[in-house]
Image (cartoon, rainbow, N blue to C red; front, side, top):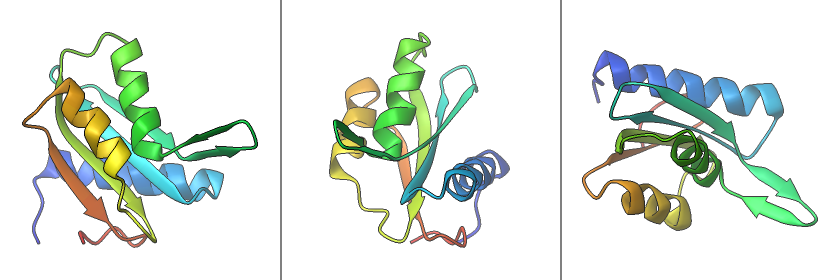
Amino acid sequence: MSLDPEDQKLVTLARSARARTGAAQGAAVRDGDGRTYVAASVDLPSLRLSALQVAVAMAVSSGAPGLEAAVVLGEDPDDPSGEAAARDVARGVTILRAAPDGSIA
């Protein structure tokens, strides 16, 4: 699958976040103004969040005017809760799932 350069950038950022932290997932979202938010999954005894949930929360807490696209990347890029959060912000958001090597699932 050939990606638009802006979507490929999201894949690269999500991959980098995952590699940097050693987390199960990495995610990146692009808001309506073109700003990006990058996150890794959080797995603490008292807090568990998917990478996409964190990225969406970062965008919302920064005042993002909606979301255009999102990428969740990992061995298991399935993330119904993160996808629901992204759709709470923007119904028509494009959500891509990617394997650790960056290939789109």
